[in-house]
Image (cartoon, rainbow, N blue to C red; front, side):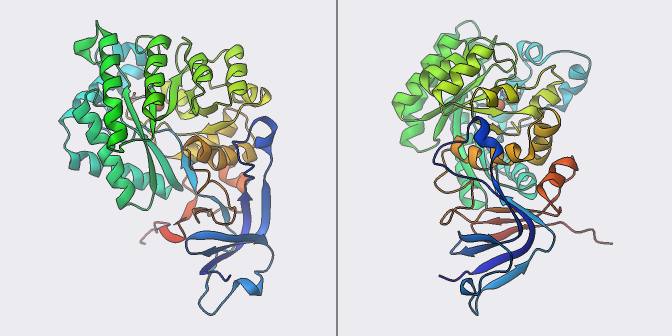
Length: 421
Ligand code: NIG
Ligand code: FE
């Protein structure tokens, strides 16, 4: 078979292994890095990657040869945890935050997620669509080709549904894939503040509709002090699994109240945040094969003391990913490259571990590893190109967008924005 398109002259190509399960522990520090490589694409899929000159048998008269001299390539980056669809924004809480008022205090005062909930309920489908499209543009120009997106700013069926419909339409309309997560269990609405179990019932009642209308693949819950208890989270996630949804859980973000144990017990696909996880719970997640979705940008933006103990997790044999958490409160950024750099600079992960985290492991975390996350033949030709001589450079030169091209299913969908004069 010959290629439609061949990207060649690439200084380095990151080629993860896909052993059929998320990479755990030491496996995360292994990958192949090709030098002076090429990527051959046919019908929007990966045909072959290799080193040195491009074999003649891959070429035909119609093959488009793309010279990417001196650049670096990786499988399209995957952001496995975001809260992308929301009304308003929260910069009005920024000074409070800088003056030491904590995230949970702001939420308790009716701000935080509840403030975004009010703005999201007021926003029309078009408002939400246009706003989310802008965020997705930022993500794409930073090299992201697939993104998970949660609802959770409606806290009632009407608005949760609108959020998920926005995700569905953007997935269809834009050259980036969206994986939808139902997260009505994101906060307790003010009118049910004194009766949270009633809200848990309401969330559970929404689940069959989510599945029937094909609005989401995953269900998530914010297990946190003052939000949902471990028992309530367990009830919600069990019901979600019975309804046919895959599950994940925000656990051990600010206070450790048992969310990770629930994740291990229910074998959720992933557990999110884990900033204050206990050693015992790390063991449980490793044994249960739950992926840790780590969000160092949230520690950074909350100005918190601790990053998730990534190294301990790897030592215990866990699989981890790195994600933005892109949301209007705890982590307002759409730049996954910066999160990857924090993976090195704040969590002391190696560049190989970081790239495995945002490619093959993130693909498992969003249940798409059969299609994306590596350069195995037949997977989608989702490719992120960096204007950088090697992978280390892309992590060492930080907080600057180094992404120069993005290919989605073999099509060029991002070209570097150029200075006009
Ligand atoms: O992952 N922790 C709960 N959810 C988000 C924050 C959402 C928000 O503050 O709007 C998070 O940090
Ligand atoms: Fe989150």
